[in-house]
Image (cartoon, rainbow, N blue to C red; front, top):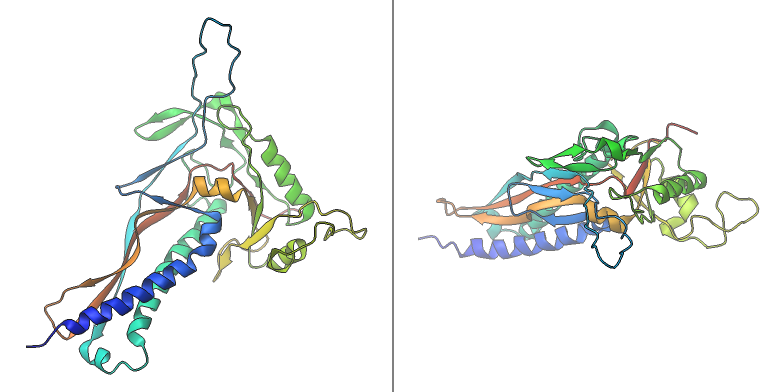
Length: 317
């Protein structure tokens, strides 16, 4: 009778390699996007909201709070899978470490699947393929400021609250970055309070990376006194910002597109929703000569509020 012990040995190698590769490659995504656990059919991502400013107390009657709500975005994770078979003979003669590399390859496929889906989220900011709870693309000039609440988990726009824009047309430059920062300063939450957005991270396309290096220095290293666009070596108005390339394989931001965000606030309002993070499983087969590894994940991506990020399509001057 054939022993299946070889399968257990394979799994330890594959699983260890998978876990290492996946955690190593997720670091850059985690810089700008959040990770949320759904553990349900769907996940309701809440936009910004609150009760507004405190009112003066007259010493007798308490001021009752009235909540002004943001928008609810309902995100539904979906399952994804790839399966790899290793034969008993492959395992027996494995002198090149291919079994361990099976874990690495499955992990790379899992990471890149999440990575590409995330990059497509940024692409959809301009195309409208993914909409927020306010019914608008992530980048829009007419985002509703507030909702009146939701019915059957669909938000109703409060038309009296007005709209705001998080989309400009300027090409990437010092002046356009400071323009976006001013826009963010003037934004308010649904309850009329300042958003307190601090735009600290510029997101660029592969085509704009060379410009980003000139503005922020190679590897985000630049001096506080050098204005990269000033012949007079004036104080640098964008010192302290960093940039991240959100483009790979022709996916993500492209051409003159760029964005600037408050990365801490963005991580609270946009990112990856998991029912199950990418993992590798082993399934029992009747065939004792085949060991089957199943890469699996259950997730989606999305955003709940547009205020923490300002996009530019770069179509202007």
